[in-house]
Length: 385
Image (tube, rainbow, N blue to C red; front, side, top):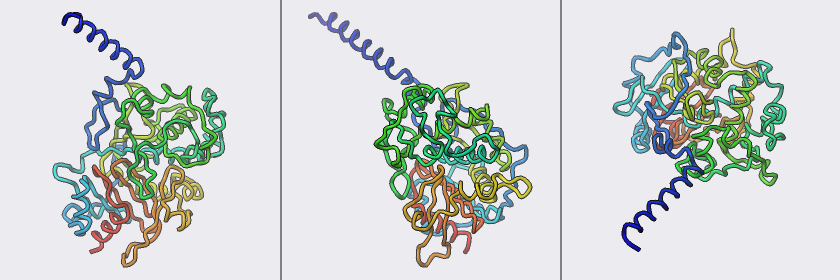
């Protein structure tokens, strides 16, 4: 065969391979353009705006908040684990505000999977407002087109025990218990890539449950995506509008951005809200205070349930997961800070800690995971010196 014919054959083979690949994964150009969402804004891709409050909540920032030194062990961990922001608020007052060089109070940070917990909060808000009757309602009632998921309840989705045959936590990162799957898959041919770049509708019609795993814990982004669709269906609003109306503006947070697979598409319910560290603190304060006395976020019983305030110590010791939130406990001997806490966590160790008993909210952002309990101890000790 001549060299010319060989080159032509190779070009034909390559063209056929590219065509076949794009037929299977038409989103590949978008993968190349966007990649994995970065921690710090700006980010490539498409975003819906979350409208914020006209006047942000006053955090009563302590004069020493930005100059207060971190406790030595905390400072070492923050540096080693590529921390980007660490803020501590106590009793509604910002006591500590620490950023990596080049970052400021204006920098927006990616929520990664912390967004899941906020979707969980909106589900409870829908219960409180009568848009949903009970957590035992099924997708068959709420999303009747999803025939393969007709028996799946809201409760099963919230607890990550839906048994949906989708992905099975290929990657693990984050939680102490080791069951925290990554938020965004770097594998362009993995199961998450299609809904991440094409939206839930690209896979929804083919989703079914696996009877062998129905009651087993399996941390899946698709569970949150379905909860997001339920919310958009019962309210007839986009999630970005809902979170603005029900949470963002009441909390006094400024405008933020929520990732979309494409312009005009529903947001990625499971990931990627970009907001400032101060606004994450504002969200945390609003939640531990249950809104305001005049306008509670939830009735008290629902508020306690969704934050997991009555989860027992034994369950917390195993890093309990419930209602799209996590519960743990501080019990290290010799430490002043003790007791239960609830937290939101995202890929890379983005964490928002909520301790209602101590009126304490701590936010940490970074490129890699920092020890969960040690960060809290260090934060408390830094503001208590």
